[in-house]
Figure 1 (spheres, one colour):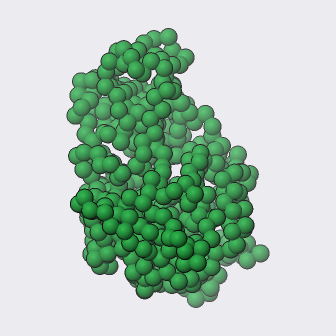
Figure 2: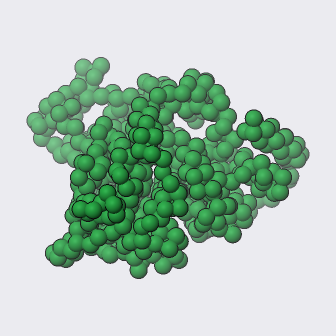
Figure 3: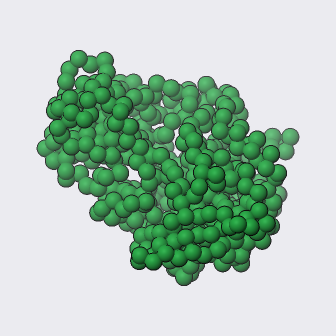
Length: 532
């Protein structure tokens, strides 16, 4: 059983890992190379080596009720989508509330993590750190790696013929901080993920002209969803997830396309994805269609050639004058402090059982937390990973034999479509609710809908039809939180509190009672189907 646990990184997953270790009676030591906690969510004016970087205007893409730690809601007065400065405040409140700072060594870089000579017997690791120029070596019973995957920019310049002849300025989106640099410039943003789209929209407010180049297109959606509700509180429900997973993938893809086009027709805006079956990253941006329709942003295809002061796009004979190129071309990830014999990264993936444990180690005493891309928030995902991983490290939960783990790892790597539900075919992609439930089941913390239907039908209805918020993960099992039920039943109150700053009295709808009755019947049918 592990006692002394080294944790690398004090971002959202690192903080959750510290707390989980303390709850299970372990002794964590967290090494953070910067001078403060927060990881990605701590804005700095300059890019720091080995740490994720964000721009000043970043706002969360997942709302506060869906992206909080499962036993620590955001303050109710916070906006539903949280600016990075307030997000960092929240993380600091979390660290203070659970007394996590005592476990963190700041300004301490992890140089190497290697197996001890007797690893096959003890499972121990030697961790070499550097603090203020002084190296130190310590032995730990287990290691939790919480460094994320947004630290190494992917900049494939060879894919852009002529880039070396370009006389203007070009850089990766990781370097971007403020839109001022675009004032009165002709700007090209390459890549239509969330960062690329944000930067193009921001640039369009000050630049002379902005082009957004995309190879495959993307679905663009607003954070403001049906009836003005936060998108993920409507989209991420157990009922909707079950319904989607029962339908053939082409049907689901058609329904998704119809929903995305209900805001604006993506074909008319040059944005419609070429591949509408495989799920690509959804782009959340509240302004893009407005900037396109007012001529502030121009959508273009992939780049054919870069010249000294201009760019030619595919399927277009015209050269467009350009002053600045921003490459929003994503990231790769690596573990420079680990030998490849421990974790080897290939094709954007690592051989990790349930995206956490290296499957081939004789002793499963190293866990990677947060190396996954679910269609949901990373905070509850990483926290749930940590809850399970810590119990494995402690010896309470057992892993299957290596052969079984390797077989599952290979199956996940192949990522073969099932033919039903959304098609998660990209590296590290996963069905958020199914994956979380898989881990919760392993620690006996998954809510039992059938039992709740008999004992607490009001809560059962909220869990199944309402948002799959993190509080559900603390209703039972180890780490149970007494406030979980109330947090679930009041989550919409906290959501509306941020927007109802002017109270308007409305007459009650005559259909409310009917809808509640219908929903209750649907819940009964759903539970019956689950039990079959």
